[in-house]
Length: 130
Image (cartoon, rainbow, N blue to C red):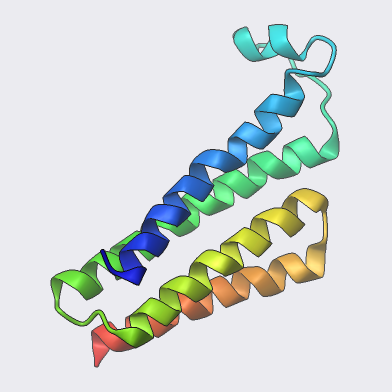
């Protein structure tokens, strides 16, 4: 399997792991386990980083679709090369940084990491369009 496809797999795994971090911690909060297994009809106060973890996951879900499309189109069209591999690596590692700093509440670095992920996608798109 190519680097591009491995980065897509790793990105999907990252998307699966992010919510586990918040859920694991939520279950340790008094009342959190009952709320988690319940219908969630009532609000439940959680630490801010757990809410940021939820938003991190939502953001990753939104980013994963276009990234997957670009990687797969590059492969299907025969345009995958070293440049697309680099773009995929930039995307993945930027998203790892993005997830960490988003959950930690570091705003400026979060935005820079988000932009780096888009730059990686643009690298792949340039190869598709050439």
